[in-house]
Length: 194
Image 1 (tube, helix red, strand yellow):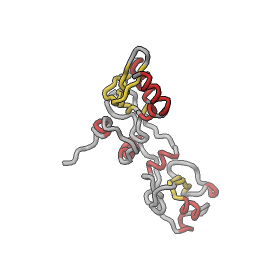
Image 2 (cartoon, helix red, strand yellow):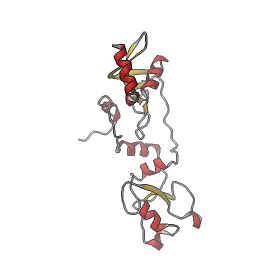
Image 3 (cartoon, rainbow, N blue to C red):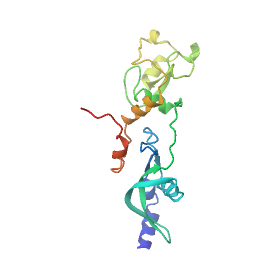
Image 4 (cartoon, rainbow, N blue to C red):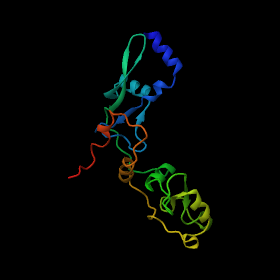
C-alpha cells in the first residue's frame, strides 16, 4: 500500500498541494477573508506538531511517514489570538477590493488597472484618495486629463477604507474553491436575516 501511495505521489506531485487548510484566529474567525487565510497542508501539519494550532476538520486524504499516518488538516484554529491589523495596506489588490473589482468610470469588470483621478502630471499623488480601479479603455481615454476634460464621473469617491470595511467587502467575493468543511467558519459572524 505504501508503494501505491508513493507511486501516485510521484505521478501527481501537485496532488498534495491542493489541500490547503483554512486558518482561523483563536476566536474562530478567519485571519482574513480576502484573500482567504489559507496555509499549505505542510504548514498546517507543522503548526499542529509544534502545538500552535488545533485541528478541527480534516480531509479524507492522509500523509504518511515511516512511523505516522495523518489525515490532512482542512481547518485549523490558532491557540493564541492574533490581533487584526487596523491599518489597511495600500496595495493594488486592496484597491480593487475597495472598488469591488469594477472600473470606477464605466462600471466594467475584469482587465483592471488603476488610475490617478488627479493625474500625476498635474500634481496628483498616489494615495487612497486619488487612485481608483479603471478598465484599460477608460484609463487610456483619460490619460493625463482631468475628469471634466473627458466627461467622466466617479461611481463613488475614492477614500481610505477601514480594515473592517475591506473584511466585509472580501466576504462578498468568495474564492474559487471552498471546501465543505470551511463554510461553517467563514460566515458564522454574519448578521442573520429576520
